[in-house]
Each structure stands twice: as structure tokens, then as C-alpha cells.
Length: 248
Ligand code: COA
Image (cartoon, rainbow, N blue to C red; front, side, top):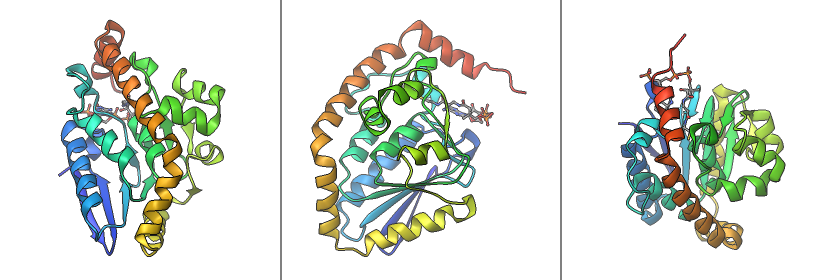
């Protein structure tokens, strides 16, 4: 089981649980997350979803092994299904981030509603170094959050940034000590869950609606470019280098 589900009152918590691979998201994890979100969407007993990893790792991004033999990034692809489910999810999603948040570990946060992080996290979007391009509509949402130049620093140069920086530009709501992170995220989620559900759902819709069409459009444009780049020599070479790197 690499996605653990647990429900306390009206809060469903989804925990990424693949610590030996730094919670890199495999196809089966994307499918489990998608299924959980789809069920939570329909389940009136769920008002809020919490997304988390462990105290030392949120997510090291897409499982790079799946990029090696990538098929078409169409609507049936597990990553695409997850992005669709997350970006259309009508109830609030609260993320609790500690340790690593790489690739989709960071871009997924752009689709969450509240993000709490432990100090000293490493956020990174190393798409270009992998011969790839932004995904999850991050080429739209990241510059919107921090401006073009900062977004270029992270999406073109692929520089890492820390929790303090993520807090400064508004990706993160609050920094909280790692040993209190999950308790705080759970508390905020319960606070949200206690509010009238329809008012919260309608409010989230109003917050997201002005850019929803653009988000979906950009998300699909990115996928087309991403699919093309996956098959380039630069990308396959970068993947080969990752899996054949020497470890100190
Ligand atoms: N896909 C597949 N496997 C991954 C992975 C990923 N995204 N991230 C980590 N892993 C695996 C490693 O291959 C390793 O497996 P192994 O023990 O069987 O060799 C294990 O997780 C631990 O990773 P390791 O690299 O030894 O840990 P580290 O603490 O030295 O470094 C990272 C952690 C995340 C910085 C490093 O693993 C990394 O750069 N991963 C790739 C991140 C990435 O590019 N994600 C995709 C963005 S689009």
C-alpha cells in the first residue's frame, strides 16, 4: 500500500507511503490518488482532503522509471488522470509538506488550497535538466504567484528553493516545526470541515473559476510538449544518468 487513506470525522487524509523511493509517484500511486479523490468528491461524509508524506519527505516527484518507457500522455494516463482529478476537485485540499518536494511534489501544491510546510524543505522543479518542460499548469500558475523572473529561476534554471522562500512568495501559508506539522494541518482541515460544506465548495469554486479554463488549457499544452520531449535523446540521456549515477 503506497497511499494510505484514513478518515477522521469529515477529513480524509491521503498519505504518500513509499519512503524507500522518497515517495516518488508511480502509476499505481497516481491511480490510487485519483480513485481516492473521485470517491471523496462523491462522498458527502468527506468535506476536506489532507495530502501528506512523512516528516522527512513529501514527494520526490514522478517516478523517473515511468518516464523511460512513457506512453502517450492522454486522458487515460495515470499522471494525467491525477492532475485532472486534483485540478477539478471541488472540496478543499490541505497539503502538509516536509523534506523533499520535487517536480510534481511542488507543482501539485499549486492546486491545493492551504499548504503548511516544515522549515528547511527542498522545493525544486528540475524539468529542463531532465530535458523536460513544466507540467500541472505550473508554467501558468508559478509566474502568477511570483512573477516571470522568479518563475524562470525555478522553471528554467531549475534552482531549488527552501520553505522560507516558498512562504515569502505565498506557495506556503505557514511554516511549522516538523513534529507539529501534521497536527497543525489536521487542525486546519478540521476547522474547514466544520464550516458549511456548500459555502466552502462554492467559495473555492469562485476562487478558482476565473482561471480554471486557462489552467486546463495550459495543462494540456504542457502535456503535448512534455510527451514530445520525453522521447528526445536529451531526456532519455538524463534519465539514464539518474539511474546509473554513482552514490557516495
Ligand atoms: N523516481 C524514481 N526513483 C526515485 C526518484 C524518482 N523521482 N527519486 C528518488 N528515487 C529513488 C532513488 O533511485 C533511490 O532508489 P534506490 O535506493 O533503489 O537506488 C531512492 O529513491 C532514494 O533516493 P536517493 O537518490 O538515494 O536519495 P537522496 O537523498 O540522495 O536524493 C533526491 C534524493 C530526491 C534528491 C534524488 O533521489 C533525486 O534527485 N531524485 C529525482 C528527483 C526528480 O528528478 N524528480 C522528477 C522531477 S520531474
